[in-house]
Image (cartoon, rainbow, N blue to C red):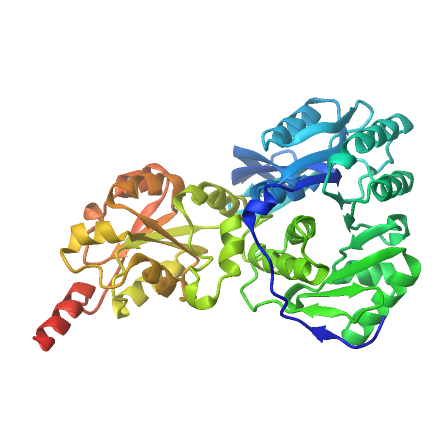
Length: 494
């Protein structure tokens, strides 16, 4: 490996229709992420601990399940090989995977193992406790034989194999060795998201994708700069038989190391980072899809880096959609902001925000010709919560409300302008008759309007209050509106 570092801006081939033709096999540790939400208003008489009165619960796929979810969202055909318990949790998990239209024939139910379940208790918008039910005991000989049989049957019809290791005992050294043998026999690539200090158990794979901390621990090199990063990579190549190594470096992007080639550094765009949960799962999924469609390793890494940059800008463990990936690859002057969400995307978004205890503020309007009153409305609205969602009327609705010649600025450009403001987290476009449905989906903690309204006049107030929210009026000291400004400009021209 040479010591020079090449900064790249490799063109990325991205065709979502080709993703739908990819057959990806995921092998790894499946788990259930359980979320319990409740309220705390008293202390237990039995011990000095809080009593959480649970009022809502949710189950989502964790571990390798998040890799599967990412692949499905991007349109791939997915098969899974894993082991779960034989009880209720195992049945629930298998059903959750099956609902994604995934081939679950490779999920083995072992009556002697528990299904991994991580329960997070969130009370009064605070994450107060996590309870783990799991084992790290290696799979039995019988389970090993069943998994191998499934791999031998499925891999010949697979385009790519992804290994998602969470250290729960599924991916033993003998199983990984057998997996490598089967893949080499069928000329299939294997990409591994690793776990643990000993990467030698992955010997023979195509690519390993540790983050910087994992690479540091596995190489026993403290990575503090570029030199130590390259030293760690060199040692890992000496220890582990692998073709490629991709070390993810958070806000500093990624570095791809290929045998007998200079390292490739892929820089990330500077952006706000909400949560890195699941970013490695997204990288693994997108790498696999890109390579399966014929991308080079630098191209695949660049695409995965772009996808990771999207998901860390979301709350909680997240996926990236085809639309978001396509938008991120579009030149800036043609791009609709990633803050823009379709109404159909809101349910999942709101669920993630609630899961992380976020207080949601909603405001709505035309926002045609942004002025100082709008800026005050948005800045004051943001101070009332954690997340500010702006709902803007579509062009047809604005025309009906304001008359011919409006809007002055079309809805796409209004989205771009509002998205450029730091106070704004998400923007959604709606038609006049969709506002109540929008409120019902978002269920904001606060709905804001300008003080040119009274609380009683605010449309949707009763629905907001029905869901436990409130309406707040933002006081304007000056009488200013887009219509006044536009009419003034027209009069001065005439």
